Image (tube, rainbow over all chains, first blue to last red; front, side):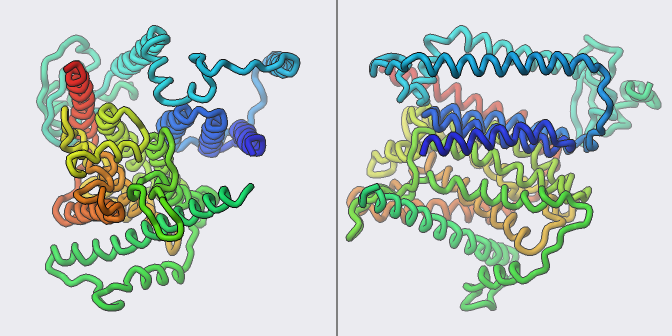
Length: 224
Length: 347
């Protein structure tokens, strides 16, 4: 039963992964990637890790891929055209790397086949039957692995701050930002030349914001 | 396989089927109730011709949906266009199996039965995961129809759902902190004190009132209902993401929306209103089923009530409200619950 499930899910994962690479329509690729994630979640379930399976679907399939699909829909990305490869030597490197990967996989399979599996003692921390449960994952994260957990959190925070900095530097114009309805924005959000100037600007329409800032008739930066 | 395993599997199957049929019947009659109650609020009569007082209207509607012509637009992306309604309805229906409809009851001939189809360690996360998959139904329907109104509806839906999913998830953290488990059945069992009135909404040390309000608002946004029904705002987008859908495929979207309303209400009942708990459930366990369904039906009425009362949000108001008000309040609730729970444990 478990073997049958494994074969089904692994087949689904590999099939979706191949479809992901082969498809020319980016949205089809995105959907195939969702298939990969769901199949992986199923594999986690067969490994007695229900928490990981649920988080896999919530985070990857439910949040990240929704954003990817959203962006593809928003930009209406056209189907990719087949172009001749620009850097032909990359093919050779790719084949080499793939050979190394397959070699590693083969080595691991050989290694596992030759060493007898030792059953874990039932009182060990990593006892296979409860290592995947929510409580043991939580305990692990907040005791033994607290430092790596905190470092990962800081890394994610840095990514957020970085994204905000990048978005700021583009310099938005009132036409980008002001939406109908009274609101208060700082001067630096509206005028790229006034970075560091946090004077508040009251505006209720695009034209009004532009007038207050003295930017009437100034083109947006992207068009400059 | 021996006889006992087979009977238990058969019972599980039977239980799942009964749960699905009950839920689908209630959903069908929610549609009728919505039309009648809304009509009452607006001083009209509503559908009252099919059967006594319109009691057969859901079946008449279903027949109509089956016999309508199936239209697939020429320029639609056919495969995804047909796939989308199935994703929507499967995502809506799959989460039904983990909700506890009642406590352990003694049935004649069968013996003691626990009225929950599947009970496992992470059933709350399972519900959230399945709900987050349902977004694709709407988003892909909007994209594959190749219609500008549909696309706008799909985009609005995905933006709205990912924004409100955050505050929805965070509003549940308080309950999880208090109960110390993600298993819905155990969460309900823990609320059985005070003669069945120790619901998480009232439970000391920190009643989850803030969490409940945040959950209800985000749940209404998650199900695309008034006043958050921007993905299908008919004054702006014709019908939003399902503009190009007809006949049974439209019916599937329609059903998915109402099943989502139902499951979201079941989650609210399970987590905040004590599930099947109520006075005298200990003496008469079967009473629990009625308490559970009664609470769920109250929430369904709330949905209809809101639809008859509130106007629609504007899109920027929706986003500002979600990110700048609801999310901070949900985080505040998590911090408060954790602190008070910890302090209470010290004494």
